[in-house]
Image (cartoon, rainbow, N blue to C red):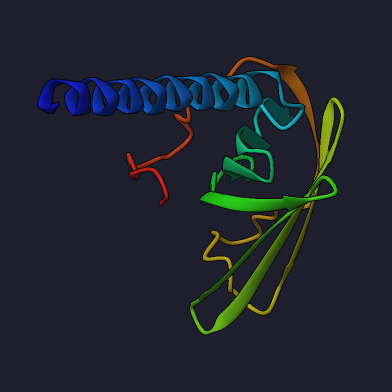
Length: 155
């Protein structure tokens, strides 16, 4: 009788493991095949670069790095996991006594970015703005290497 119970428990564990592996494969397909996944940019010397990857059907991890041109090369950086509804992801933060709101509208091969803030709420350098359109140059999962100081991934 004890061996029969062990056999039933083993079958249940195997089924759970199989279900978990199937779910992981489906999650990987979401991340790789998603229109949210890729690397985008505008400008060469100044502008913004965006790396994003679908984490689930309704969320995305992204890194945004923006820089002004010479002579100062001021920076702005965001690394976040955001909810996506109808192609729109919204980043909200409060820094330096202000409020930062950056909207990411995914539109096929491009992302329209709109930055709305009060004072220096985004914590970006002088005259750095994320507002603009970035174009996709790769649809592969990105390396998330835009962090200028080696920041850890967001939760």
